[in-house]
Amino acid sequence: MAVTWDPLNINAGYTLSNGDLTITAASGSVIAGVATVGRDPADTDGWAIQFNPGPATTHRVGIGSIPHTLTTHVGETAGSYAARCGNTIFRHNATSTTGGTGFSSGQAVLVLIKNGGVYFYRWVTGAWATMKSGSNALTETNPIWSGASGLVYPMLSTNTLNDVNTIQGTPDSLDSFPGFKAWDFEAGGGSSSDENIRASGILLTDIGG
Image (tube, rainbow, N blue to C red; front, top):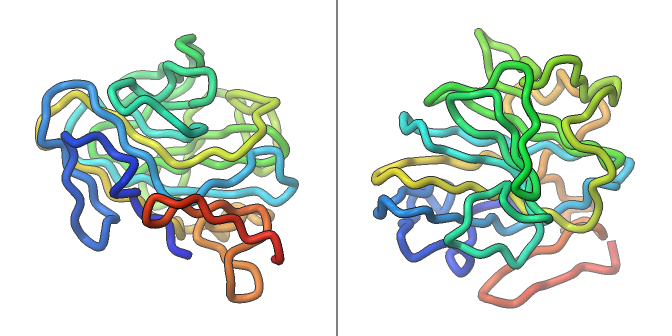
């Protein structure tokens, strides 16, 4: 099952296009959106999701548990983790973590989770570069946050009119991260046993693998 933005779990101030992969803000208020497929950060299999932001500078992208209040920025709740565009501030549970180099307007972002660790990378001249000083997903060293568990879903928020973001469930250059799977990955041709999918307002769990 390819991950998309969930039409039933986005603020009414957003519109969807491009097969629900692209989300556009039709409001200047704080609005949030949630994607369709959840993964567990505690998995020993790593997972990776890519965000392709547009030119606005108020993006927050990341992951979080559901339900998430759709008028609240990602990173302001106990279950969500976010990077903010234009600075080096990372947010979780309304608390900031600083240091490193944040992503710029229009710069792709990669979020990786594995063994409870949460890592953020940005796309720089044809390669992924860590956003937090000393944080390395490959060696599982110095995650921005550790101890994360329970299903999390790709999320974003903004407060800029016409802000655009496209989700990419199979990230670019993922072969740079052996041991991590694309968020779109399906075991045995179906949804994997640790994957939850939201469709038509119903939470579906494949327990058969």
